[in-house]
Amino acid sequence: MRTNEQVDVVVVGLGPGGEHIAGTLAEAGLDVVGIEAELVGGECPYWGCVPSKMMIRAGNLLAEAGRAPALAGEAAVAPDWGKVSGRVRGEATDDWNDRVAADRLTAKGGRLVRGRARMSGTRRVSVGDQTFEARRGVVLATGTRPRVPPVPGLARTPYWTNRDAMAAKELPASMIVLGGGAIGVELAQVFARFGCRVTVVEGQDRLLSQEEPEAGELATRALRADGVSVRTAARATQVGHDGTAFTVRLEEGGEPLRAERLLVATGRYADLATLGVDAVELDPEARALHTDGQMRAADGLWAVGDITGRGAFTHVSMYQAEIAVRDILGQPGPDADYRALPRVTFTDPEIGAVGLTERQARQQGLRVRTSVVPLSSSTRGWIHGPGGEGFIKLVEDAERGVLVGATSAGPAGGEVLYGLNVAVHAEAPVARLQHMIYTYPTFHRTIEAALGALN
Ligand SMILES: Cc1cc2nc3c(=O)[nH]c(=O)nc-3n(C[C@H](O)[C@H](O)[C@H](O)COP(=O)(O)OP(=O)(O)OC[C@H]3O[C@@H](n4cnc5c(N)ncnc54)[C@H](O)[C@@H]3O)c2cc1C
Ligand SMILES: NC(=O)c1ccc[n+]([C@@H]2O[C@H](COP(=O)([O-])OP(=O)(O)OC[C@H]3O[C@@H](n4cnc5c(N)ncnc54)[C@H](O)[C@@H]3O)[C@@H](O)[C@H]2O)c1
Image (cartoon, rainbow, N blue to C red; front, side, top):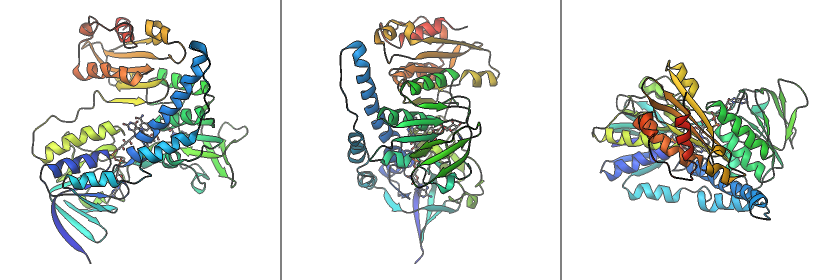
């Protein structure tokens, strides 16, 4: 039987952004329905950030043990993927059970409805036989799905996406990774450290192609040091599977690549068509839902997270969620500001970046000064020895004398990034940063050297 119900707010998709909005608005006393097709919590805790970082923590331990002979003496380790998959299953994902997250929402006063929802009009959402009319409005926070490129043969094979990789109880003996972006490089390194023979096939001429060239070069060196075969500017022209192994033919010719598993990590897309956004006169073919600074996508409609195309990161989703909550509650607050958007690729070494790359800054017509200083030139980098590779790169808008972008790569590169994140966000004058006291002997002292080297 079809039912129609009025509530204050409907949140579609309960990943990091949607769950935060639904819970906070319910705590504020609104009548909130959160609709989730799969697991409350979304991609990040079950198939993304959390399990992948658990794997990386384990892989980094093995790598550190491998550095012991040069610095501290023999350290014997025997990699055991069972420990990693056991922790992912038991601690991170509760065996892919969202009971705790679902209870958290209801404890805050929100109502959870399970199912795949569609927009059916302005402030109207349908799921199964139910239609909800939202007095205040609807929030779309449905995230993204893996984009599978149209390589001939690929669709017919049992390829893996991030979800299969996160759930793997056993490690394959060999794996081809299609795509050398964040997912590709992080997982390639972890799997290689546990003994899997990995080949990364990246279409662009470097890994992490959206970051600085120096970042891609460092990632390539790091992966190769772990035994990963890195093929850049490589286009797959045919994929096959013979029941046991995958073959990938490359445009450049030669013997096809062969491996037990194939991981597709070639980016993600927002599925606006099945979400029915045409019911509110938005373009179902668009790459993302465009919003204004208060996360409004249309009358009575807000959107947050990956779906907005402003950076597919949990911290972006949470940041936008805070703004949407304020706006829905009628509280004033600043517009979303993406000038100092930080991101960290958790390879070893970590590669963090904030704001614009040098290329983006020049494309914006800025008069740019830059510097690149290796960590090895700092006392701490030299002390660290093996595993201490990294650099600081700065991008300054020379006209205004402020940093507009920076990259921090190295051990704890993502943590060192924080100071640069503040500098870009607060538009701290370079002249003031040059006369600050930097703790000795830290990795972040390299920032002082890089400020002095700007030209
Ligand atoms: C392997 C991997 C590693 C990552 N590592 C990091 C990291 O280290 N740091 C970081 O910041 N980010 C990382 N990310 C990205 C991060 O996971 C995403 O940016 C984040 O999860 C996006 O949050 P979201 O709120 O947009 O929605 P999502 O987490 O994508 O959740 C959306 C939810 O909506 C539901 N949904 C979709 N359609 C419907 C519908 N029609 N009706 C009802 N429900 C629906 C889905 O089932 C899902 O639960 C990683 C991603 C991957 C894949
Ligand atoms: N540490 C983190 O914060 C983290 C980690 C993993 C994922 N993520 C998020 O998840 C998103 C998705 O990750 P991703 O790695 O799938 O996407 P991505 O956009 O980061 O990288 C995809 C890569 O695949 C390449 N590619 C595309 N088509 C190809 C083809 N046919 N053959 C070979 N290469 C091809 C692209 O050139 C690109 O380098 C990321 O954009 C990121 O926002 C974040």
